[in-house]
Amino acid sequence: MQILRSGSQCTPFQGGTLVPTMGALHAGHSSLIRRAAARGAPVIATVFVNPTQFGPGEDFDRYPRTFDADVALAEAAGADAMFAPAPEEIYPRGLETARHEAARITLPEVARTPALEDACRPGHFAGVCQVVARLFELTRPRAACFGEKDFQQLRLIEELAAHPEIALGCPGGIEIVRCPTVREHDGLAMSSRNRYLTEGQREQALGLYRALQSCMAAQRIATAELLMRGTLEEHGLEIEYATIRRAADLLPAADFHEPTRALIAARLGPVRLIDNMACPIWR
Ligand code: PAF
Image 1 (cartoon, helix red, strand yellow):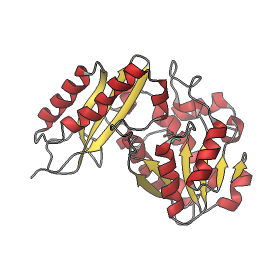
Image 2 (cartoon, rainbow, N blue to C red):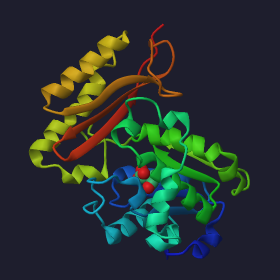
Image 3 (cartoon, helix red, strand yellow):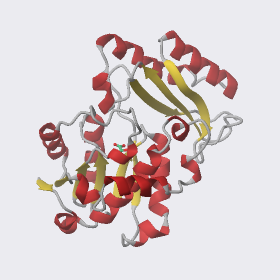
């Protein structure tokens, strides 16, 4: 597997399948890379801890950096190249300028829905858009794999990839491949941030999965949301949101007659965890 540091080194892989990551790879990332490899085109995994998507006081400095292990995992999963650029390659005009530019990005509506990620992490999605657009520009993929674990991010990137300015740079456009959330044996969604959890917190964190499961049989939105909140509170989790939204636009759902998604963000001290699940349709 080749290690690439510059955009020009990515040229031979244009038209391939991209798997953008921030490193600290785990089995969830392996499944993204395996899904990418199954498409048959060359696979580029990326590792870049993007400073512009972290807010003040968030975990940018302590975000786990495990490059050698990431290379080994990506290679074993079937990646042909690992693009691990320095910040100057992504933001040649410097980080300060990049932050100003991010602040001017107008996000698609799906990223601005009330009381979800954008409300809890202002500026985060602008940084995500900025870095993903730049990775697309440097690698010009035909497809890119993203996990459903970050469901609102996935919907945002689907909108971003359809934007004429982005799509024009990549002949044929960019297909966004949705990849299912990978879970531990007991249901905890895999996340690079799980390694921050102590043993006790690891048990509490299971509350997110249990809360999602607890609401799957509910046939009314209000009941589903109450069940989720109850389970999260039983596990001592501090709730940021626990809500049922329409799967397409992430606006509040009135009923379960159309595809909906249960979405949770909760905190355990300084550790922030998110998870989500598709709800059944009830007619
Ligand atoms: O989901 C992530 O790991 C990041 O937000 C992404 C998409 C790699 C952009 O930095």
